[in-house]
Structure formats: C-alpha cells, structure tokens
Amino acid sequence: MNLSYWEIKNWLSHIDYVIVGSGIVGLNCALRLKQRCPKSKVLVLEKGMLPQGASTKNAGFACFGSISEIIDDLKYHSEIEVLDLIKKRINGLQLLRETLGDETIGYQNLGGYELFLDSDDTLYNSCIEGQDDINQFLQPLFNTKVFYFKENNIGFKKVKSKYCFNPFEGQIDTGKMMDALLQKVQSLGVKILNNITVKAFFETLNSVKIETDHFDFTAKKLCIATNGFSKQLNISGVKPARAQVLITKPIENLHINGTFHLDEGYYYFRNIDNRILLGGGRNLDFKTEETTVFRETDLIQNKLEDLLKTTIIPDIKFEIDHRWSGIMGVGKQKKPMVKQVSNNVFCGVRLGGMGIAIGSSIGKALADLID
Image (tube, rainbow, N blue to C red):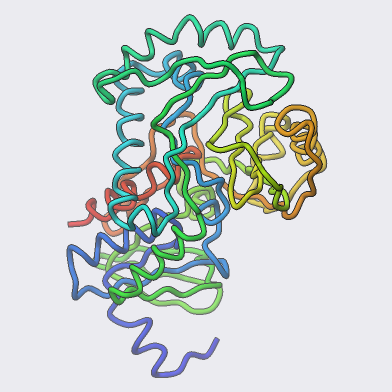
C-alpha cells in the first residue's frame, strides 16, 4: 500500500503506544494509557472489521464462576489462588460497570443458575455436599451466603429436581458494551485502524518496528491484547479455544430470566430480547475446537439444538435466528498472563473465557506495566 504524506503524518508517525487487538482488553489498555498520559499518541490495530476473538461474540455473562467450577478449580489450585481468581473477576466486573455505567451496557442482576443433568449424580452430589464449605470459603468476598439450592420451577426437563442459585450473577448486552467502549476511547483521541493484521514485530533499543499486511511503521511501545490469537505473535502459553453459539428468534411469553450453566459450565444459556442465547459444547471435541478458525460444526450445533428441544424449552416451538463462533484464549493455568515480554513489548492475554469479568482490569493492568 502506498500511503500518502497525510496518512503517514497523522496516523503512523510519532506513536507512543500501539495496541494489537481492539477487544475488551485492548480498549481498556488504551483507555488507561490515555488517562495516565493524555497527550500520548495511542494507536489500536484490529485485524477484523469489528473486534475479532470473543469480545463481540461472547454470551454476555457477568459471572465469577459456578459452584461446580469453583469445586473443580480447588482440585488443581490452592485456596489462595482460587480466591484470588474470584476476587479479580468480581473487581473486574465492578470496574466495567463503573467505566461505562450499568444502563449503557444493559447490565441486569437477574441471578445465576447451575443445572445438573439427570445423569450427573456424582457432580450433583458433590455440589450438594460441598455447598456449605464453598459458601464459607467465599465469605470473605461476599460477607453472606452465595450458593443455595432451589426447586426446579422453571420447566426444565432431564435435569435434577433442584438447581443451584446465586443472586450475585448478572448479564450484559455485549454489543452495547463494546460500542460504548469504542466510543469512549475514540472520544479521548485514540485512533483505531481496522482490517489490519500484524504479521511480525522487531525490537530496537528504544522502539518497536511493526510489520502489517498493509504497511510497516515504528512505535515506542507495543501492547499485545490478542488473547486466543497470541500464538501468531509468538506469545507462548496460550491456546485458542473456539466457542460456538446460537440464538433463537423471539419467543412469545418467554419465562426464562437469568444466566444458566449446565454440565460443569460447558453449556450456558440466557434470555436476551425475548430470545434464548445458548452456547458451548467445546467438550464434545476439544481438539477440533482448539482453533483460530471461525466456523460452526454440525456436531456442536446439533447438540445445542437438541438441548433446547429436550431440556431448556422442551414444550415451546422455536426457530434458530443466528449462529456464530468466538475464539477464546486458554492455558494450563486459569491465571491470566499479563507481563513484559521484552524491553518495549508487553502482553495481556489468556483470559480463560472470563473476558467480561476480567477484561477491563487486565487492560488496565497491561497499561500499568509500562513506565
């Protein structure tokens, strides 16, 4: 691409900070940098027309972890580590709400539910038996009881007679949230260039040379916020994890309100605009879903539809309106990776499917790594 003098001068010269990725982390990083250094020149590069990855493709769960997830985490992490993870999620959600406002992001505190399949005796019993211990474990964070079991009175089928409820879980409108975040950072003078793929970067003593599929340029500092795509920029320790989603057409008199977790959280659904949004199924074929390719598969989409028909809304006729997929970043550890890669390169990645909960705080932490 042959750039004009004006394009080079105004967009690609004297750049203080370049951020790769215009998702929740990248935009919050830009926001924090502008708050700290109002006169700095901040440029965000995004390879998609809209933010790729998961920021505009997630289910909009404002959650901190279901009871089965917390019990499972305690098998592989220390109590201190798990408590810290949950605390970071709670604080991250609060930061998101404070940054943009509840009304702006469509935040609703309708509570969270965990359902247990009839065949899940072991999982169900472990959660029943562990309920008191988990509530006591979370007491320092909530100062009250978090999880308790209630009778299934919503009409779900093929699940246990009781579900686990927590009143602290909420939901947001993902589209409104990202639109508001984009407007906020741009109002501060942050420039965002879309449809630009960063192919490589090379560090010099006081700057970073950045090669894209359209042009090359330099900046003082580089922040990588590409999460599931981080491996493409040689950031190790992060694997892509595709999540498939579908949403129904509007359903008259829909009686489901809240966020719902099923089968250890591998399936999740919620109400939105009188529709059911349902996602998950990665556990049906982990290897295939370890990809950066946006695509839906018959195996998972058929399973999602079957859950709607047999379990979630078994007595209601429905039509599927849209299907899509998003790419998350996961790793052997659930702890996000926020670190200095080299003198002038930094990264904030591996959000583990908790982008809504921790994306704002990870973006802030990424910015604060830079002197």
